[in-house]
Length: 136
View (cartoon, rainbow, N blue to C red):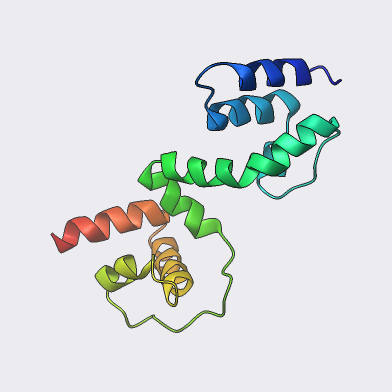
């Protein structure tokens, strides 16, 4: 049993245990945040590996859900597109902002917003905030 396994078991057995909070503690305790983000897995016991494998996706989803909008936008700005980009350079800011969540145009909208933000030495979140403010 590793030095953190007993505490992990205790936290999981506690009444009303919140998996996200337990996972956050665990990742910090074993220095495995990079693993949750897709990096290499540290040296873990069988129980710890299974806990990590079974809960990492739920942790990622919850982390995104709890993330403030500003951080979320900047997180998207650094993500690698998972499909070829489409030319949306002629779209107005409002359409790009609305297109962020679109399955077909989302990556392209984010890439264009990042390009426009970089041209003004802003983060994507700052650019979106100013563009949305202007549109009101």
